[in-house]
Length: 218
Ligand code: HEM
Ligand code: HEM
Image (cartoon, rainbow, N blue to C red; front, side, top):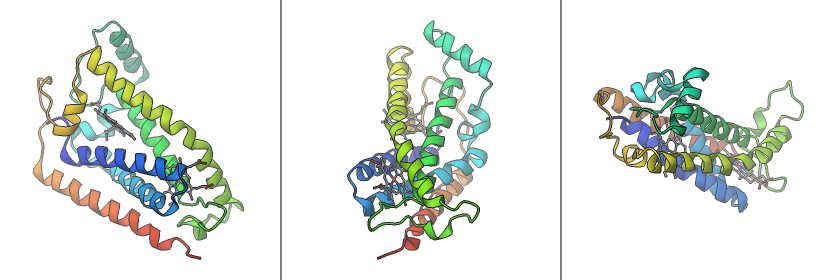
């Protein structure tokens, strides 16, 4: 197994929540947007914790690599000699951090974003006192940042295609099944840890979705 079940469930539900949030956000479908955005937020909280307590390949420590290794990997990629990794490769690890950070910035700023008409974000009443214009500032960032969402996702999908065509690595099927037939030493899976991950995923999602109860109604 390369990817444990909680990491795979995280990935594909995250894809659905980001696509849902983007489409509903662009189409002013505020009620649906709140649920998709909050689901993305909960999934991100799960991924943050799982990055410390998950199985080996899911841990940040296994895929955050020094710059030298990242550059070395990219050079090898161009020469078509890049080694196969049972987990994220050094450049992929950096891309994962970028993807997670941008989506986290979107999800967090969304908590204070309103539509200037009938909707205020769930945490609008809890703005830090230090910043007078906290909610409008978060709303501005939400609007400014959304333009990087499509480019970073496009880059991610392009990278997966390059791996398939250039290095002949089948990364999508292993993100679905968790199995990697190209890796020599599959990482062991601990059933209890997997169960813990599934419970954590459910708790994070339930907690984040229930933030919608705080949204002011007019
Ligand atoms: C909204 C769109 C998407 C987002 C936000 C996204 C985000 C991510 C993130 C955060 C990871 C890291 C997984 C982890 O360690 O937890 C990842 C990995 C991955 N994603 Fe996506 N993803 C998206 C769409 C897709 C699509 C459409 C595909 C399939 C074509 C895909 C295939 C993969 C694969 C294969 C990996 C594992 C890469 C590896 O083996 O190193 N993703 N994605
Ligand atoms: C990763 C998660 C999220 C993504 C990708 C996302 C994406 C977007 C996008 C693309 C827009 C349209 C921006 C524009 O065209 O100006 C938008 C607007 C909006 N988002 Fe989000 N969003 C996310 C999370 C949230 C959350 C958690 C909330 C609140 C609970 C939220 C509240 C809003 C509101 C109220 C608007 C409308 C702003 C306006 O009409 O001026 N978003 N979002």
